[in-house]
Image 1: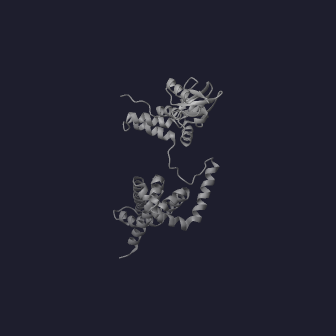
Image 2 (image 1 turned 60 degrees about the vertical axis):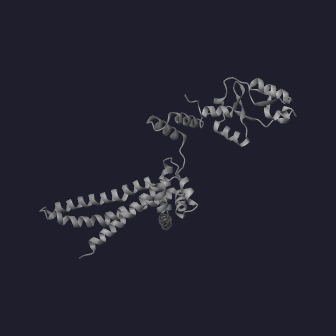
Image 3 (image 1 turned 90 degrees about the vertical axis):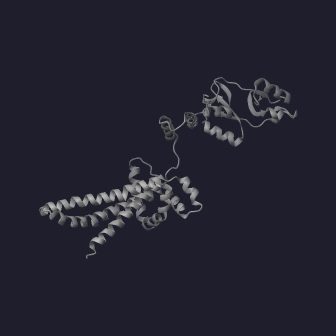
Length: 333
């Protein structure tokens, strides 16, 4: 028995398997969450290899596309003629003329090879990689790194040519896939989840408010009228306590003339010693156009619970409580 048909089957199986490998690598690295790979990198070399590939994603994609293209060309050069050669006599056995048998064999061979390559070599591994992105990325990372090492000069040349084409049409190529979603995408996801009923209305309101902080300025949280509770820099502990009782505020802005110079908490006056200027802590003064998320970061770093905001109408105060009320709006009982 001739070994030709069996050799063709073996070569075809290898080529389709390699194509499946490159397709799975391509989709696994795109779908995998970098944070999960970083968690696994402490104990798994395969996770570290996957992270290295993710950091040079364009080169990896060039390698995957090169592998898929070579496999496709070899299937067309080896498997399709072999299937054509095997099918043509079978069609001729039904009494078809030689030209019709040849054309029929060519068409059937093309359909069979395309089906095997498309379903087994591309669609199935793609679905597997998307369903198990981190697992498939780590499983395939080390052999893909070996392939990239062997073909790196060629991959760099191909990648450079592709990047050159992108820049000519005004697109900046990237080498690493972002691991975060932009606020607009997250907002659409929250809205969609609420619409289809998979997200509770209370959480929908809270998440929407949180996402709005990205574009919100501190001036939009400021009261509509200027003014705030304040004491003079020379105020005594008794005067600080009286001001706190009359206003209901525990934190008071300390003024030196018309300028805010600090913040004093009423508990700091309970010792009965020192004036407001000695008991105060530094005050934060920000422009009304400052983004809320930047002001929150500054408040956290300086351990301040309020900021003085310069608005067009005058100075006013925004507290951490004001931000929390916007972030967590009251829900109906």
